[in-house]
Amino acid sequence: MTGNNEFRVIADLHIHGRFSRATSSEMKIEKITYFAQMKGLNLVGTGDFTHPGWFNELKNNLKDPYGDGIYKPTEKGEAKIGYLITGEVSTVFTVNGKVKKIHNLILTPSLEVAAQINDRLSKYGDLSSDGRPTLNMKASELVEEVLQISSRNVVIPAHIWTPWFSLFGAFSGFDRIEDCYEDMTRHIIAIETGLSSDPPMNWRLKSLDRFVLVSNSDAHSFWPWRIGREANVFYLERMSYDEIVDAIRRKDTERFRLTIETDPAYGKYHWTGHRSCGVSLPPEKAIMLGNRCPVCGRKLTKGVEQRVEELADRPRGYRPINVPDYLHLLPLSEIISTVIGSTTPSSKRVWNVYNRLIQRFGDEYTVLIDASLNELLEATDPEIAEAIIRVREGKVKVIPGYDGVYGQIRFSHSGDEGKNRIRKQRSISEYFKND
Image (cartoon, rainbow, N blue to C red; front, top):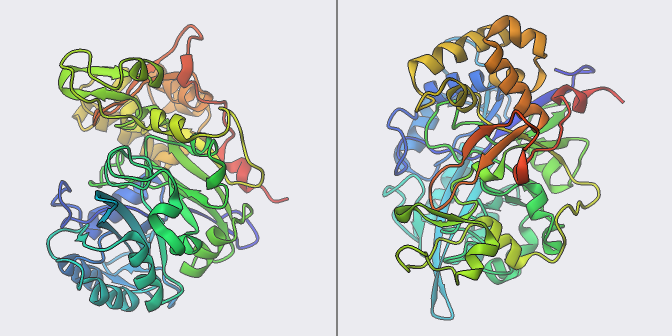
């Protein structure tokens, strides 16, 4: 709460339930709720409402006490988190003889409307086959079908730069949003940046100015280094489905203040590369090689940075007016793991440090953004406290991810942050001071 009955809402609207492929079997409401609160989220998308099994679990485990589209867990105890009904679907269709595979995020105001969507979409594919079902329909048809059910529904192109399954994907995407969504483009109000891109990269395309940029984790597990690693920050008098959607639709920077982003180099597809051969290349070098692997000669997986460069019509550093701000963060568990030399953020050593910080500050976002150096030094080892501040101040380098491999964090001690330097950032509390 920020004063005058206005709430800070930190929302991760794109996750997956336990019925999605490559998703933890323990991805259940109880655990999502627990770890989302640990992260510092207070609004989470349910994900996967199209799957019959998950839909039943949502009906049995969530309730909408005020009829405003914000669902609460029915388990004992009062959770400080709400759920918004969301799902992701894959539309597969052919254009000029080429197969296009586009992932779409759907927001809907209630489980009742979600049931109607499910009934309509079941004509295009087996909804029980996956939490993110494959539908044999054009992306434009999806928008039309969903909006015919209710004008309050929203369709958002998901992780738009990922090489596979996305709007601008190098393998099965498009060069223009209109070529994908056709006359339904007018109903698209937002686009999702994905882990391997951030607002500055998207601002380089003039054609994207009319859309609001949203960021979500696309989490397949509840662990705090996955859920909430990207999120949206709103400033609302009342948290409701319509308030969230209206803030996005109107591009209202007073209500939709900023997005939380990982450094895009941390994403699995930032640079062009070939995982099997351990080859990772920036755009200019990949282009020099004709996008062929210098080891095996096969085609490289084109990275997001190279794909943005192909379509950009503005220089690096351009910023449109009246757009939500952004913060670069890295997951706290990853920071701790890097400092102590652990091979995984799930190790007991990392958890011990992480839990002490959460017990002291309440949630991960507070640790990463608001805790002072002196407060951190009182709660943890100096090396870890310093690393958290370095992330906050931009004194960190990330070796770019490529071809499905996450980027690697490197802390600088000599001012050589390199090309991936993060700008010095404001405390999140500064975004919520009364005018």
